[in-house]
Image (cartoon, rainbow, N blue to C red; front, side, top):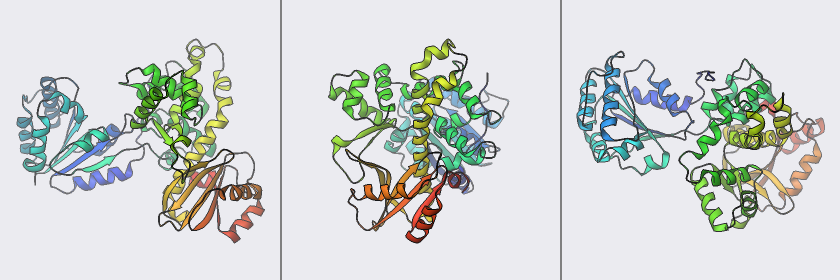
Length: 458
């Protein structure tokens, strides 16, 4: 069964940059980085539509295989029905030929997974530096290299590239494509189960309910989301079973290292710390400290990808039930009882994004931010203004009731435990809305109130 819907989502800012560079009529050098599934290939496909483009995907093999693949890509760019019009056994010869092609029209040369070429072709970095810094100068060529962010940032190209680093799509980038089909609550769930990963968003069939999508994507052994999230997370890892046990432990909340060791059955704190550091470097796990605190022992760990959190909640320990279809209707048993805690986490993430993307709404430019907690209390999110003159304390309530004065008073009480400089401000986020009393009070005291409806439609 084909789950791909082949829609293109978001990336308007990146597309605008690429098109501006394309219109310059001189040599432009761009690097595009991002994790697998973050939409590098989709962005490039969208950009090169109706443009003369050489689309070469480097492979982790040897020089001969890569030159053969590059030759076919150049041939296809010249005549779409041909694959063997030209044949190169040297990178310089191939790049010289691209320069000749650019004498007639603008050429876009894409080397996808440049890190593979780097590790497969001897001295490729020297050759590319020569062409990027000198040979391509002034030519009607647009060179795009893709690869891991860290790898590309460490390369010495001889010319600084325009660097595009693709992150997951925000809720504001996903919602316009689905809000006429789904309720506000379903939009939030859709964002949670995909985590803003463009590849996963493309799996969503808007002709189905969110429940039907979850059942076909996650709760069916033939569905892509049954395996894709964990495979992407553990690809190329040594000891993937150990990393899996740690990620599962972290997915249960935001535990401390001692709790992670207990849940993952790791005896040594040094060993556990090493694995956690590797996962942090990969961007899979984040270590959080309470806002305004630097004591490392108070740190908590969390998964960065909402879709991976959902996978661990509903699939990880239930694979036997799913594989053997042990129950006729798995959704109530595996999803509904996990829904409340997960969707509250999604709501908090979307609230934070809304603050970052709507500076005018809050009349502040966000600076440092993060959650806060101590042994007794916690605050969902605290945002310090960029100039340091004010701090906003935020409460996110995803409940089926109106938020009233008691919630605000509780937030104000808890905020007094946090030392900050300047004016103290407050923002409340609610699924259902706010009482009339709170509305009246907020208008007199500059309290910002935001509903799920606001976040879905503003």
